[in-house]
Image 1 (cartoon, rainbow, N blue to C red):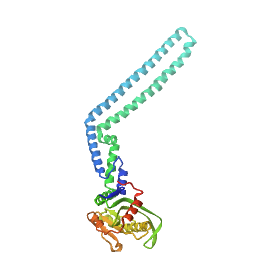
Image 2 (cartoon, helix red, strand yellow):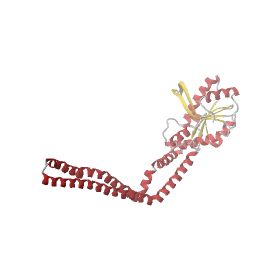
Image 3 (cartoon, one colour):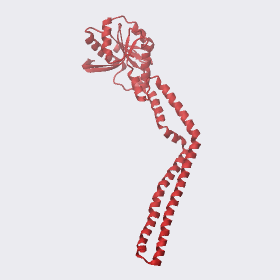
Image 4 (tube, rainbow, N blue to C red):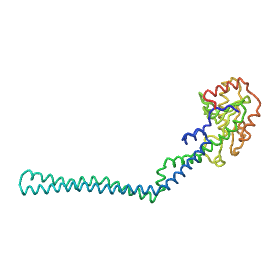
Length: 334
């Protein structure tokens, strides 16, 4: 089995977008199925318990009405006590005509007015607001329980939608394509080393097609063995996207640029002429070989390993080890 370093870039992006602890691309559909099963069970449980929920909420409403009655009773008792005290003071004034009783009358009148028109309504208003809100809660449970369920399980619905959006994205399509290629490359024997998402950054711009416009590249896969260094770019594009999709470079030009950077890098590393083979893998077999890029070989998954293995040996074991050591400094073998 081949030596493998790193993970494909699009797979890492898909896993990052989904989150939720998944480690591998194949975990995505399993996770989605589990979330949907959880949603079904929760929805079933919610509607099974809905009558009890409504009953419980109506009990809360009944308790609020009881609370209103208790508050009104308590405040009425206080106000009636003040009224009795006022009546007694008036009787004392008529009987004794003392200043003490006369001066206490305004206080009692004020107390009755404040208790009746200010403090009692304030005490009742809080419970009345609860009653109004509780009526709305009950009405919603009775008329729109599905909406309430969605609100209660917002996080679950959001997670499912997020995964479904990712599954329908071009990123996921690309990740699946790269996964297919990687699974095939893993079948190479242990004389080969496969680097995923290898990045090249040169200290200065390189001339490509007459312009100094090439300095860096991010390569899907690089296979290193005695038969050479293979720069592999994977495309899982539909025919429509090939003709209409926006892009900076054609796929042929992309892998051609990557190959040139790799060639210059290895030439400096090995101090001799390296062999770099540029491969464009078309997952849907809808990208053709172009004479304009005659050193870019267009392959599919089925014939990729055969093409790599049929190449004659070119590098010495020392050269291979030197290349591997240079690349693997940024990787952990997986």
